Image 1 (tube, rainbow, N blue to C red):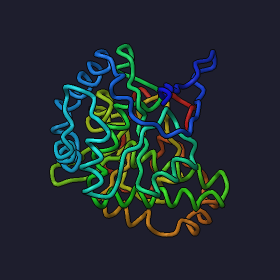
Image 2 (image 1 turned 180 degrees about the vertical axis):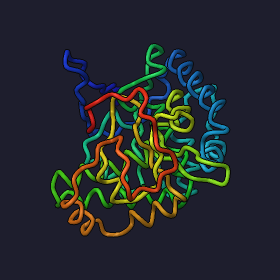
Image 3 (image 1 turned 135 degrees about the horizontal axis):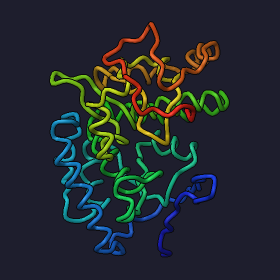
Image 4 (image 1 turned 135 degrees about the vertical axis):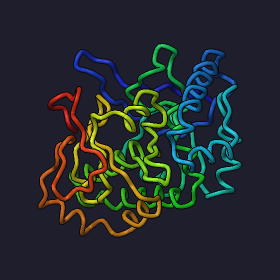
Length: 295
């Protein structure tokens, strides 16, 4: 069997250009170097020390239940033995970023793509694309939660159906993923906690999302989220707060077709705006925000 490739964004003088790949690969666990394991160890220990008071309880419990540890990069086969028995999901290895249709197809069939390679030591604090640590540590534990697992499958099924509604519908669906799966907060009896993988795998954004006065923190509303632009080059200007994973699932399980129709009448909202109709947990100061650049 050929060794899997490490497919990374192309670095150009105009920034990073995404390179997509579709192949599913076996995790080449024996090929990881001591440096690879040390990077995992550093990131894992750093996040575990920080997230005890910041992550949602479901994430913390699942990380422990799956047997994730700091010493070595986990084996996908070991994690799958627990994950598949719990919620029917499984991890599959991929070489890098997937095209939307392939990604939706995997989610709809309870397969979560995990990039096989891990970032380099000089990339500990920031990487512009998903790697093994982001995918595995950030995303996979919550797939142990039955309701969140159902949400992810429903999202994938919705993505497949969205192919027939054009590029704007896909953009709206991407915003939903961004503001929930990647950068979502949840309101608990202990206050706001993190469940979004993009925050859970980022030391800096953990503190920023919960404690900084700069960003808005706004109650989740499906159409509001799907019409709100976002940032890919900085911390978020706005975080949306759910009450429960059940709320998220119920909002997503419904047919999106009427929602797409309603959103055609709605102008996309800039990432940092607060609307009169919003349920506001925190109105941000906007300190340090860059102008322009919303996606």
